[in-house]
Image (cartoon, rainbow, N blue to C red; front, side):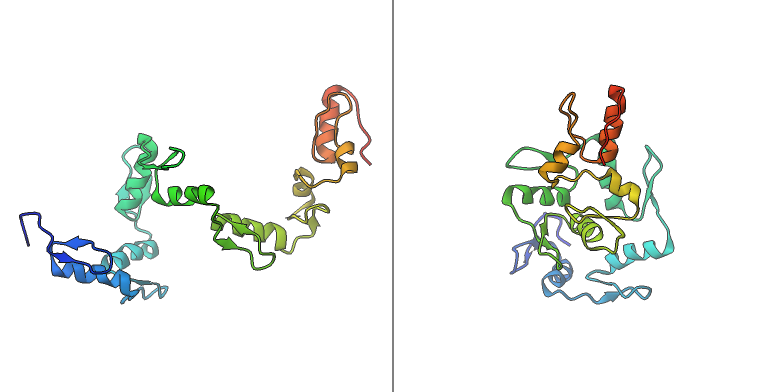
Length: 209
């Protein structure tokens, strides 16, 4: 091992340098996509044995890393480090285009798509694209799921009638917009439940049928 700080072993694919040849060898697995370390419980594979070791904590339920401020526990130290930023308020990842800051690099990466217009997550049913995977999954559940209760204007689905009534559809017809607009103050209430509640506040009822 070099004590001078020199890193003579350089990766030819990304120019990252290492002090030891063994470290370079481990690093090269990232570029080769080789993942020789397999979890025997779920068949997930990893590039490094240390990553497999951390993964196995998920199956064991062990969370050895504890936050001293709120006692929340984590399976790996990196997750604890990210969590501690909540308490410190630290947000080291800054957007160079709008100066908004984030406590995770992944959050910054997602945010940058707003500026680039990139929407990599596409719905196979209707080709609608989204910035985040969670938004795509939410879209699939609500728009293409097997729901009995669906909005007649935008086809969004709901598990029950209560959810449909709470829905604030922004694609209402001109006729429905007039129906759900208060004639006393001009407030638009989106649905029949909203206009009824609003009119009760005025001390009167409105027939929305």
